[in-house]
Amino acid sequence: MKNAFKYSSLCFIVLAALLFSCYSPKYTYRVLAWQDSDYNDYEKFDSYLISPNNEVFHFHQLHEQKSKHELHKLADIIEKNDFKEFLKERGTYAFLVIRNDSILVENYFDHNKRAQLQNTFSVSKSILSLATIKAIELGYIKSTSESITTFIPELLERNKDFKKITIGDLLRMKSGIKYSPKTSFPWLNRDSPMTYYHPNLRKVAIKKSKIAKAPDAEFLYNNYNPLLLGLIMERATNMKLSAFIEEHFWKKIGAEFEAQWSTDEKGFEKMESGFMATPIDMAKIARLLLNEGAYNNHQILDKDLLTAFTKTISKIKVFEDREWGYGHFWWTLPDNTINPSIMANGHMGQFIFINPKTNYIIIRNGLKKGEFYDDDWAEIFKEYTKR
View 1 (tube, rainbow, N blue to C red):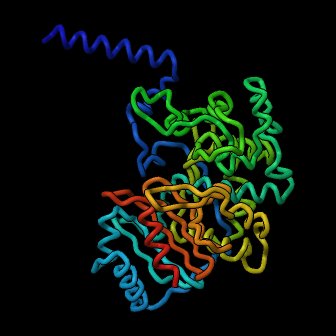
View 2: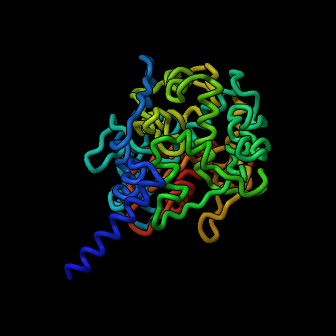
View 3: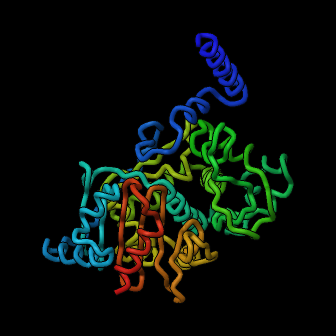
């Protein structure tokens, strides 16, 4: 027994030494110790604050009886008696429904409150998309047709074909860059942990991205794309993404609270997943889209670019017969109209959901519990907001 224990310990030491020789100790530790991403990962990373100004927009608060009526409508859709209980069972931390600038439902669970920042995971990609619109509008980026190597020429040293990839290819998830979401052991060499836990994400974007196919040929959800786009934004604007968003976006939409963006060890924002905000302020992002980029008669984002960025480009089967659309880091629910519902969606069921035809906004934050997936949430939102 002692010999077996010594042998196992020796094997572990040898394996650890091998891993540390190939990867940085900090990255190796993170992957092996932290493993799968967690809702509270923001506590593990450094971050930048994104401050609002003093001009706060407040939604109207409707009577509690109206809120109960809306909760009954939601309960009927899922064939349950109590929708709030359903939300708690599904690990929800925050759930908001807003229509015509009035709050119909606002509920928080598990000690969460209105002023508390919530993790958004891949909703961050959609926020990066809005920042890109502003960078194009201001002339920092000429257009989505510009080659990524205009801003990241180092990629050409590895493969001349990087020049064929455009900023639009990154946004549409059609870059042709190799990516596998699998994270089975030894994990460290996998794309998902590499683009999530690595302490130097700029280096990952430049050194680890590899071309697998021609650009604009095939949709592949890929976390190298937002890293590369974030690096382009940083170099094009000569600003941290957080500072750019604060100046040109967060201070201009009536946000009430500070937002936050997690960073790597080098001060580079986790472009694929690091944005955090309060649900009430996420609703103001949705409101900006409903108002075609305008706030208080001021055009914050170019209307035509915003329409182009949220338009359905690809259609993807997300579960059996359910189909979602994808634009430029924004999801849609295609319904054979020119104005489908728009979604920002993140891991564990983080949602900014917008139905522009009926003027509904839904925000959901929290955990994933049970056999209930993102497409199930989307179906509830779709059914509820269609009338």
